[in-house]
Image (cartoon, rainbow, N blue to C red; front, side):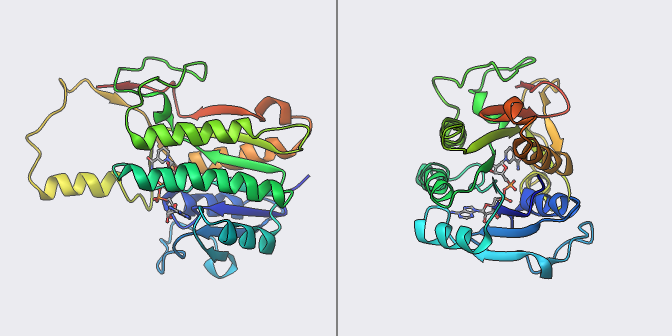
Length: 257
Ligand code: NAD
């Protein structure tokens, strides 16, 4: 079964543009719909080869039933990819609104519209509570005391998505947990490093300079979403991914502080 139409929530964001690119490269090319609280950026880097005029944009709020239902009805998606979230470092209320209420709203709207497949962008941070992680895998539990509101609400949203996986309702879900993402269009990592230089804060050092952190290239993260969608759609591979979570990384998640 091929992907006829994909609905990319958060598609105007950093990872979102890489998701558009990777679904654009799928043969046969699906219809690509973006649902985001803001439109696609006016200027898109030459790195991307997709034609923005062929991407159908629906501007709306994930936590609004009206916005999400209307856009899903207009798009008839084969698969939904939910990669919307407020950035790290904001107030708890905004995470609760988007990651908790928004994800719950999406699951309800998707089921109502009989969409069968949902891929959720979680985060490797859901298992991090500030302690070093060595060779962690998917069997590691979510910490009882979360690191912060971002990671806590990402974990709760992931749990909702995975619990919604149901054979009897023919609704199949998977959660992907990238670590820090880098690549063209990044809005956090390199801009943050530039700001440190601009502020002349380069004399500060955290730890003894042996710290390790896990980074994943944005194109690889986007590829993993396409693969996850394809595996969910294929009845011969579905059981290996449905209801599961996967770290997306070049190695086992590593956070040494
Ligand atoms: P981003 O901020 O560039 O993109 C997120 C998009 O979600 C934005 O376009 C934003 O407008 C949209 N959005 C936010 N609230 C919304 C709402 N209420 N309704 C509709 N759209 C809304 O962030 P990103 O770095 O591309 O992150 C994408 C996903 O990957 C997020 O779920 C994030 O938690 C996850 N993630 C990111 C990293 C990283 O290092 N960037 C690491 C792990 C996981």
